[in-house]
Length: 362
Image (cartoon, rainbow, N blue to C red; front, top):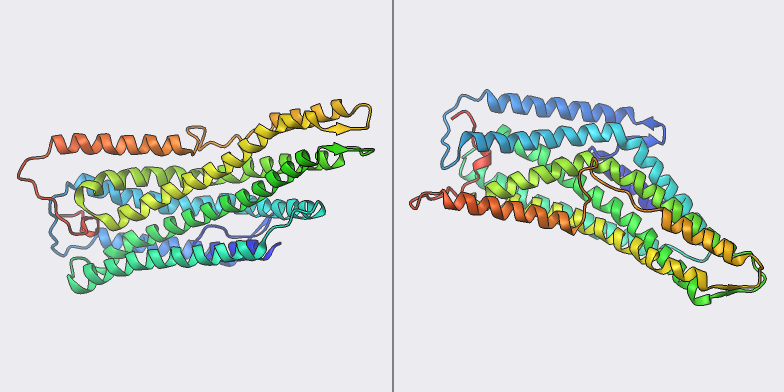
């Protein structure tokens, strides 16, 4: 398996995103690591909800607070469950991508591994830096300086937030790996159409392209639905966080969740653009000249195979991740905010402190 895929798998194990050793075997060590993490987080929640020390809660309804925390808890456990259920399938998809790369090399289409590794290193460093900045700032001001919250209260939010944040990163990275291959297929098809003539050949180049495109569609339709549970809970968490925090001025977590959902939609949409480019160019295969007598029938067969292999990627059959989904979420958030503002008293002053960190047992 390629070096980048190996680094992807190793780093994703740390954040409970993939615990597979092979296509049919899970890592016992990282499964135990997941179980320990679940046990530790359960203990943190126990200490948080059994904390009897007096704490104040300003300007927030307890129902809203508990709903927010429940969203984080559900997101955490959904990421763990998705890891246990889908790790081997994801490993299999990455192996299939390696096979596709080997076929592309035969036709002179090479991946720029240095560029891909550079993108991985820069994006991983930026992701860690952004998250560390938010987490450390919250810890210093809320736990150390102001002493508004205890350590277990801070951990009850940031343990699931960490898993969710880096799960989002690895989902986007997975989509990026697919996008790179589709970009090569677009270039491959463009070269075929520009060459335009195959004297005395059997159209093996065109058939190879069609075969690789079908394999890529198969990998895409297999890989992306594995993230459905995580994407669905992430959308719910983002909606709840943004609707609450736009009004309550909790800008740090709101900013993180907004970045997550935008990046997933953007990465998903880039794949659709590449696939649609191939669909748009596919009819031009019929204009290729060839000295073979029955070449038109073979070209028609190739075109039909491309046309019939569509992307069929939905989140539990409910919605497709594209810009229209992002627009819908934005519309819901703005509508909710307008309603909330209309029913807010004139003398209401929202507390700008980190309200999610406060105790729900007030």
